[in-house]
Image 1 (tube, helix red, strand yellow):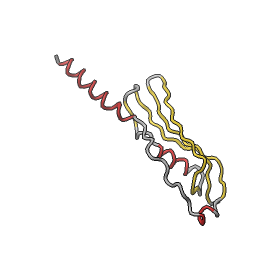
Image 2 (cartoon, helix red, strand yellow):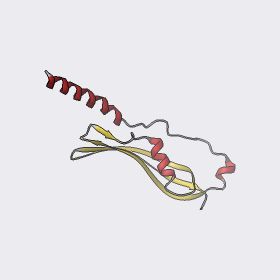
Image 3 (tube, helix red, strand yellow):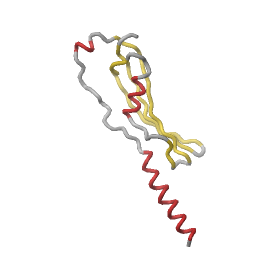
Length: 117
């Protein structure tokens, strides 16, 4: 009887925690318009990449924050110092499996424009 309770508790906790690994794509467009006075002085800085990942131990237990598009975009913006805007943005997500773990990532690529530092 005690073993059944422990098993039920473990199953409940495991199922509850599996919801923590759901990706948060969210609303990732921070601005669709840039003032001409701002964009006229910007120069192309180059391609950038950012990602937000989460590892799941034993495929069920999430470690760290959940993945999200806003975090991946923020990481991309810090890739090149002086970045003001990102254009030609692509957002992709992946799920990979290893022995005893899985990893979910959201990856952002684009072209950075900003002020040369």
